[in-house]
Amino acid sequence: MTDADGLLRGLAPQVLGHVARRYGRFDEAEDAVQEALVAAAVQWPDEGLPDNPRGWLIAVAVRRMNDRLRNDSARRRREERAALHEPAVLPPPVSDSDDSLALLFLCCHPSLTPASAIPLTLRACGGLTTAEIARAFLVPETTMAQRISRAKQRIKASGVPFAMPTGEVWADRLPSVLHVLYLIFNEGYAASTGALVARSELSSEAIRLTRMLHASLPADPEVAGLLALMLLTEARRPARTGPHGELVPLAEQDRSRWDQELIADGVELLTTALPSGAVGEYQLQAAIAAIHDEAPTPADTDWPQILALYGLLGRMTDNPMIALNRAVAVAMVDGPSAGLTRLKALDEQLAGHHRLDAVRGHLLEMSGHHDAAITHYRTAAGRTTSLAERDYLRSRAAQLSGEDRTPEGSGE
Image (cartoon, helix red, strand yellow):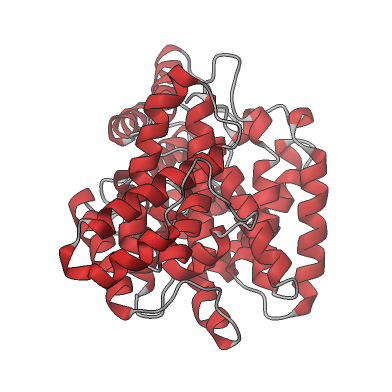
């Protein structure tokens, strides 16, 4: 990804928030902003980066919106109102305010179920493609495209204005907002597709939005827990790739490269959040991340405590990925055979998912069943859409084919 691509992705939610607030028409605003992004991708490489990239994008998107309104003969009143706002020159007066957080809450609209609101927000605020969102939810891409389209239509039909929610509305939409931010961060930290291990522009945007949310709700322990989880996980990024961009698993990372400042910030957030109210899923996941980060070596990891925390998480959520990670923790505490037994309960829920085969291969490798491990590593490699993960899995299979050894277990 070029610098311009990263800049466009980071500016997209801010520009969409501005245009949606200005016109109160989310669906049309998204189309206009997409046209502005395409124009920038074509013009900026030849003409150079404008002095005010955000203002440039807003100006073009506003013109596209005005064109749409003028060409809509059934909406003459809107046409007249739009004409009054049309900018005379580039760039127009642009507010310094960032509407990203307002856009986030708009997408988590009360007329939408979380299953619709979360994908819509991932697309509008996180910049994820429909295919990436579909993989995150384990559904076909066509199904996800229809879900996003219906969500946009419901927001349009509701007529609710673009504005930051207040009072009880915050609490009603907050779980969906947190889930969205969590998924955006995960896609950024561990890219589900492409050649790169990570997509830092997505994880950085998720952290930025979560910091904004935490500043608005400083006393909410789950908001703090999510931010802590992101920081504690992001701290490992420098060590997650090797010299050629290859994936480096947790147990093999050079921990001296971990960002100690982010770890300290995450631990401080978590320490403040845990005693302040009911403990939620994000606080527990942050606690697990903190245990990994505070272990000087893989052998020093407090796996019994991690297993206990996964036990609490398992009582809060039926997320199969949590159960998959718990199986790894079980293997580290009670042995690989116990972990493999745990995996059997996930065969139906995660049928065909590459991570189930990858974990099964890892536990079989731990137990010394190398031929079976090779089979599952290769199966996982064939199912993942991440080229970096595919290469790693193939490498594991190749190493087992060439030498007979049982490595230390790992989990991430």
